[in-house]
Length: 226
Image (cartoon, rainbow, N blue to C red; front, side):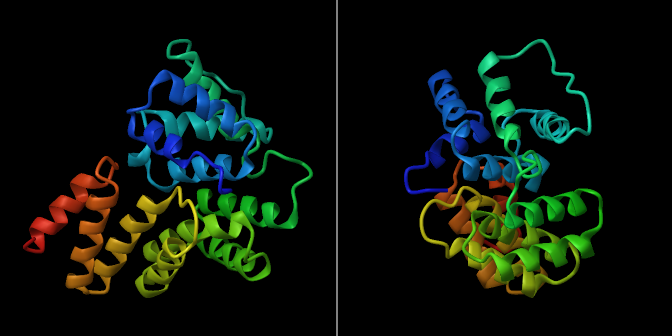
């Protein structure tokens, strides 16, 4: 994301508290900002619970697949036109949608495809190659959260924690900050670092009080004794 990006719009839409002007503004912004389109796709893809409305993640996946020639879109007839508009906008130039993608975009697309196909080892290799070869690219920055999630699921919480911490240390807007904090808390739990885990959940509650992970954070804090 660039300095002028409207990351707060993505946050409000994902939380389900966006106004109609918010949705229209996000629609317009996603039409011009490839970085935010990628952020939006990953935000939904990171955890189904993060979808702003029920069914958005599945719907967006079908739109993305159609954008790269894999499926025919069958959108529901009901719902606000603006919502469909920003879902289309998010998918229109998502990783894999452009036949003239750069090498960084190709690596990002291939890694995402491998992850969705359940080929986690291949996805990890591709994300690492992306980070090594194109460290300053927006794709590499976003991949920190995706790779962190894969490493955590793969039983490597220390490596996962490093990825989440690198993302949280990035300067400027961080549209996947809440996902990184959620992953950070889970990684710390797996490492048995109860005190640090509690701090992570308190930070999530403080900085993202309306996120989809609030109940999980509260439950873990209660289990940890506050």
